[in-house]
Image 1 (cartoon, helix red, strand yellow):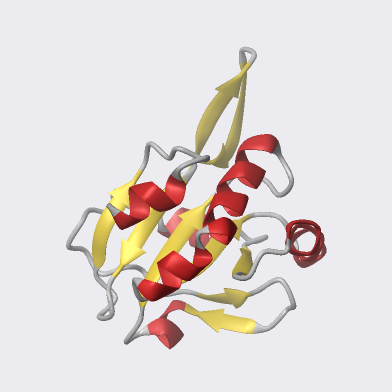
Image 2: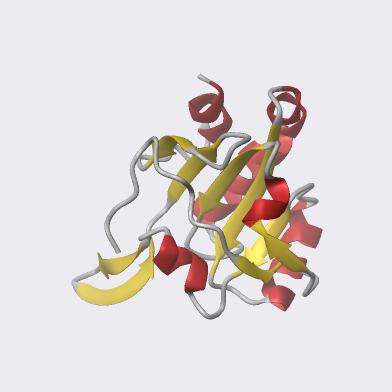
Length: 150
């Protein structure tokens, strides 16, 4: 799939949230969405990012945003992550990699010389009509809300 750009229609998806409940992006039409992709629950960068969004959740909601996090972790992992850090938003359990592949964020990565496939931390801002209005690919995990709202 080609790389998504600002102005493109955000790919719709149907998957499950942390509680196994069906979740479709199209259910959020009429609302602005922060769709953020992160590598793994309960790791330092991902925790910093989630907690920044949690701590500024009222500001994001005041700006009209719904927040959805996406990783390839399963429902139980997401439930623990939400419980441990009191996250007020849903996390998508993309265990079949349908969503990360649709958004072209499942890529080859490298750590300590070892190559592997993983989620590239990326955030898509989507308007009420399902159009991508911004793509943040250089995420500052500790100041992510600031990046979204500027």
